[in-house]
Amino acid sequence: MDEFVDNTMIIRGNNLVNKGAESIEFTGERYQPEISGQIAFEHFHRYRFACAHAVGKRVLDVACGEGYGSDILSKIADSVTGLDISEATVANALSRYRGANLEFVVGNAAELPFDNASFDLVVSFETIEHHDQHEQMVLEIKRVLRPDGMLIISSPNKQHYSIETGFQNPFHVKELFREEFEKLLGSRFANVAIHGQRVVYGSLLVPEFVEGFQSIRVGGEDAGESVGLVAPLYDLAMASDRDLPPMVASVFEMKVHGLDPANFYGVHLLERVRAADARIHETLQIIDEKEFRLQAAAEERRHLEAWLAELQTHADGLERRSAELEDSLSGARANREELGAHLASRNARIIELQAELEMIKSSRSWRYTSILRRGHSGT
Image (cartoon, rainbow, N blue to C red; front, side):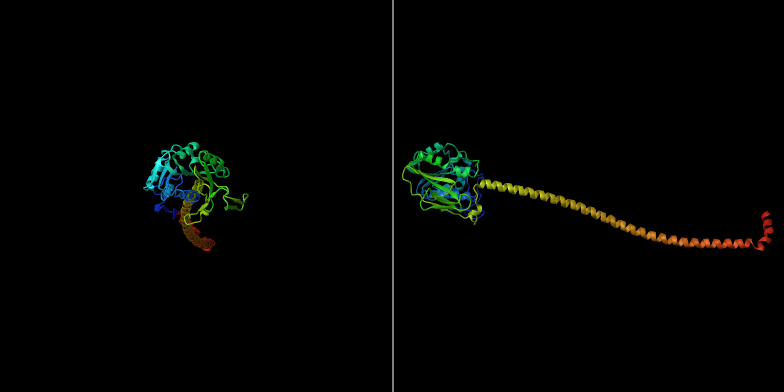
């Protein structure tokens, strides 16, 4: 049984394979087993359904893609030939899957490179919508099938897949409504039976209007009960000129990374991946912008801190200079007070001397000696 083991390994058949080993780039056009979620349920379920009709048969897998489905069928079929139009995809399949009863070839679904009546069973899942040569493809499949051979083919139901969802798959060329799909197959095969497939918590394959199967939907405008599967996203048909085997409903369940598949529910994986990538890119841009702003703010802070440090140094210098000037001013004030006191003392002495001089000049001695002073001054 194929199932996901963890984020790095996958069981494929009996082999444990590195996820992504020798892998082609996932674009959404071809499914790859490394991709989990709803798309995994859809694809694995179809091949598991086909296995019940491939035991001991010669099987052709038209548009085998990466090759995982052909490998699954090869475990119980007599031989399996996987065909794909892409040389790179076939080369990848040849490098990843090997078996004595398994081969991969390059070819066009509308021009199959095989002889008439070469296969007991032809499977082709999600192929016919990728081109518009529908009549030619069905004719070619009919040609390479043995008279009692059977075709198992799936196609997205245009009503539920595209119209109701508004989704346009860029890899789809011409999708079919259920009636168109059934009419196309009925034009070449005597018997056609349609199964509907839609992923819920697993994958359901249910015959149309099968007795004993009831769909119950709750919530929303489409709530109610009905016989058969409600609004199947894919139509899977069985077609043959012989009587068809009994139609059996089945459900396929698989853990995804050990979690409930409902956590991965969504209609279009690639669209979700691109949307997630866009959100991640937008988030990274916001983070980059914020980091840039933080770096700019940090740089501005460093400049401000340097400027503040310079201002603090200057302020410290001014404080020291102010203290020095204050000390100098205090000394000058003391000197001024001392000089003032000295000047006052001198002025007082001058006044005393002037008073003494006036007393001398007004004395008798000064008058009596005036003749002597005159004579002395005359000599």
